[in-house]
Amino acid sequence: MSEGRPDRPQHIALNRYDLKGQLARLRDDAPLAKYGRDSLTLVRDSSFTLLLVALKAGTGLPNHTAPGPISVLVLDGRVAFTSKGERCDLSPHELVTLPARVPHEVMALEDSAILITIADPVTHTNPIGLESEREVEAEQSSQED
Image (cartoon, rainbow, N blue to C red; front, side):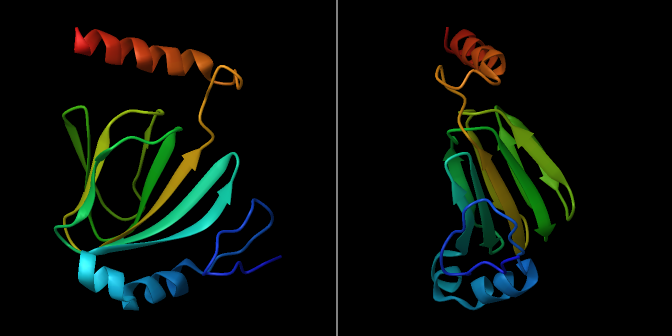
């Protein structure tokens, strides 16, 4: 079992992570003080990415999309997660999920920490979940009309 190196992402394996310790390190790093956010990629694999993110109140991740389905778990603090005009205020131990390529943003309502999971993008070469991808594309297309 590996503790995982905090300075480089690990591949999927039996890895153990001290999130409290790694979060403390993030909160001591200069980027958090300078930019209001800092992150650490814990796992980067062809099918899965896991990010630990520290946010200062009033900062966040501006409107963007992810290449695959995501989950955002609040570890501490409070964040506003907004997608397609719907806002969810999330507190510790609350989780939100979203399909691939759906625009969203995250804003820290107070100093916060989140754990972001990004799954392998669903593509025509990876048919698992292709139907849900088609549903998202159809919905996005109908909103553009």
